[in-house]
Structure formats: C-alpha cells, structure tokens
Amino acid sequence: MLVPAGSAAAPPGLPPAADLQRDGLAMARSGQPLVVLYSQNGCGWCEQARSYLVPMAAGSDAAALFRQVDLDADTPLTDFGGQRTTQRAFAAAQQVRFTPTVVVYGPRGERIGEAIVGMRLPDFYALYIEQAIAVAREQLKPQH
Image (cartoon, rainbow, N blue to C red):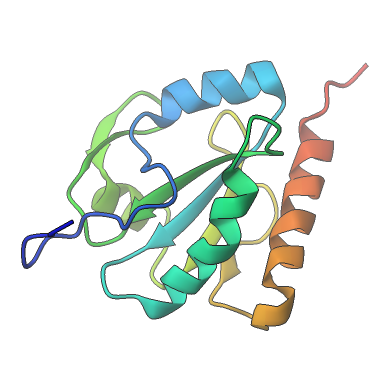
C-alpha cells in the first residue's frame, strides 16, 4: 500500500478512533473499557506498542475496545460528548504530548488509572496493559 508523502494515516492494526460517543454507548452495554493508543507517523516505539496491542484487540472475546488516535492527523473524530473534532485536537485536549501513550477510558470518557507513556520495559509492556484493563473492568462493574 502506498501512502502519500506527508500523510499521517495510521498504519494497519488498531481501528482508528472515529466516534467515541458511539464507542462509549457500546462500552456501557458491554462493561468493557476503551484502550486508546496515541500514536504518530514515523514513531518506531508506536509500532512496537501496536505489536502488543493488536493481538489483545483481536477476536470477539477481547477484554476491551481498542482504538488509535494520531497526534499528527486531522482525521475527523466525534468525542465522548458528541462534539466533532479531529484526532489531533482531541489528543491535545487530552493533554497527550508523547507517543506512544496508552490511556484507558470509561464509557463517559473518564480516564481510568494512569496513562502508560512510552515503552516502559518492553518485556513487561503487555502486562502493564493487561493490568490497566483488569483495573478498569473492575471499576466498570455494576454496583449492587
């Protein structure tokens, strides 16, 4: 596949964030959190992060929804509140400045836990993500 020079299109792998409001409704029904990889064009560490996240996202039994937001892309995006924006503007509003950054969200767009910034100890990266998802799923369980 050829990508035009200067294009900030996301490499294949994770679905791009397009409608976070719709994703939030799906999350509320399923109890799944949303894992967002903030990436950018030419980020080698982002490729490595994707290599861990794509297998986690595969299959219908995934523990979370997964999306990608590109800091350098003006791709249209609907945020959790239904406002139209771009991936670049959404990342800026979320104060994400470094890539890769992984943030776990609840259905209303609330952050759950700490952002995972960079590739802290690549040997344990998948474990960090799995733990963040487990904490989020626990917090999202219905309260009786």
